[in-house]
Length: 352
Image 1 (spheres, one colour):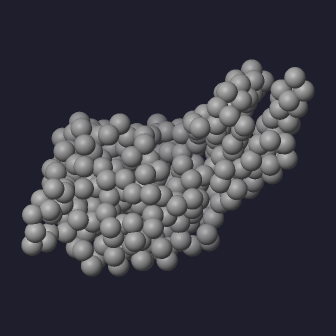
Image 2 (cartoon, one colour):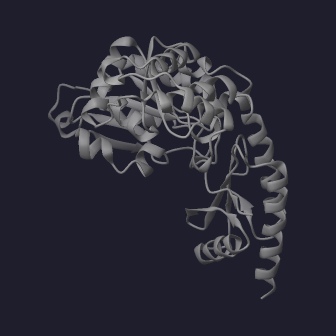
């Protein structure tokens, strides 16, 4: 049996989701006539405390459509240098939207220093030098933070960023692909974060187990603009109720179970921490992501390959780091088995 810990994107839909797909009411969503999509969008808006929501095919499309709705061409997108938008979305905001990605130093906990955000915002001034810079367009945050090990950014930090953005008249977009993981880990509603942002993108896949789809939430005016951007990107869907139906179950039935993933991740983290020469990086494990560092790139690649031969799949996170992610379908037993395999493989490797 293969234990796939590469990502929570490999999660399979629940049996109830498959049944819901088969029974879904459908219509043409571009005309606004798909009842399942309409229910999903209203549910997402209610959950996030936003005026409206839009169903899109992926988190990358959700982030891109949001940035295009917030900004005109040539504007700065101020974001962390470890953010998913900066590393993993193919530079789409620049390539397709003419936006300038302006990376700012990310702290180990996923926050961006407020003073660094302030310094990155170039405002009009009565001097020539201002015209060397792209004007600011939007600030982007991420929660949980993928490359920082699934850390939870505090809601209080979001309030501080919102205050900074408000002083400069800028919107704040939240890449909340795993925001429900943050909410469950912190024991707080998602509205504790979404109340401080102008828009949010939420993945229905990953830990929530839907086979496809993300939501963009914000004001009604913003969502109207994002809907137009979705169409421009080729994301207008027709009888999309067949994929919206499992999204409804994702939001109503699958959020609470994320706590299981967090508990299982701690089993993996505790097991990895016992291996000599391997360190958790970061050492703090908040949610379902565990990142660990080996003594060099070659050692990490060799360890990942050896684990794969034994049926445990992990992802290479670069710079000598590997990542494991728990999700629906991965059990406590699977995690304890994976730890045993890691220990056996590492002991064999370090004997030579």
